[in-house]
Amino acid sequence: MVAPGLPSLIAIRAFEAAARLGGFAPAARELQTTAAAVSYHVRQLETHLGVALFQRHAQRVELTAAGEVLAADALAAFATLRAGFARAIDADQTRLRVTALPTFGTVWLAPRLGRFRALHPELRVELDLSPDPRDLSGGGYDIAIRNGHGSWPGLRTVPLFPSVFTPLCAPGLVEAVRGLDDPRHALRAPLLGRPDWWELWYRDLGHPAGPGPERFGTTFSAEHLDIAAAIAGHGIAIGSPILFAADLAAGRLARVHPHAATDGRAFWLAYPAMHQPSSKVIAFRDWIVSEVSTASV
Image 1 (spheres, helix red, strand yellow):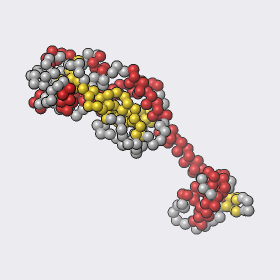
Image 2 (tube, helix red, strand yellow; image 1 turned 180 degrees about the vertical axis):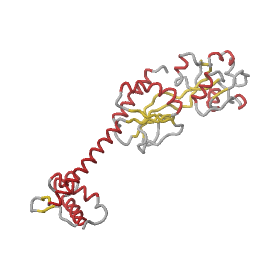
Image 3 (cartoon, helix red, strand yellow; image 1 turned 120 degrees about the vertical axis):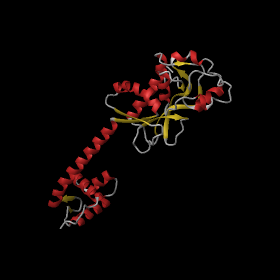
Image 4 (cartoon, one colour; image 1 turned 90 degrees about the horizontal axis):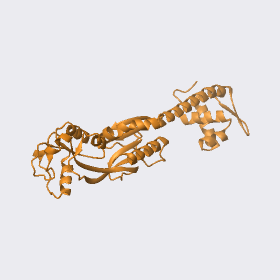
């Protein structure tokens, strides 16, 4: 009588290899073990089933009638598994998972992804936007676009462009904000965006104190929302002239002052350093570096 439950998968794997390859020695070579170990695991399977699966001769082994029956099913099952693994690998190689900061992903990357797809129609891009860095070690994402100094443990990084910021507003507000470079000067429009960026910008101009909280208008959760409000004429935002170069070129935005400040950080492409990068990662890396080099920054 067959013992309840499944036998050890190690034993089943050893039997399948021995049946397919015609012996314990070739099975051992494939499984990177010894013929004695294969023989042991097959014997464990025979004990579990209560039937002999191989007739053992001096220099060879031969499947018994019971072994022939089991071998047919085992070989078919493992062939199905191999095909499934191959399909899974193929599916993963055609799926590119990118995580990026919300403003970078919304304003700079998403409008350009059509060009990447045109070059690589075999790849399906999934874009995740998050203000917090995603973990690349767990396999959930292939590539990240991060802002920082480019040194993250376990990641390879490629610099894209610096993180800079300058006052931006709708063209119709430019005259109304003359004197912006003096934080004490009264303006007819509120400030939008990160107070620390405004403080750095004013500090570069020689003002140790930035604008007070009463100078600010609505608070938004992301830079691209500040810029959207500025385009609508609701204030003066501080943002990246690189990320919003298309809005500047189209006349939706105007620079209020020629000076751009920086906090020393930059945008980086990052991917796991543990293994050689896959072809899909290499394709995206090369494409985005080319986009940065040809973009108006």
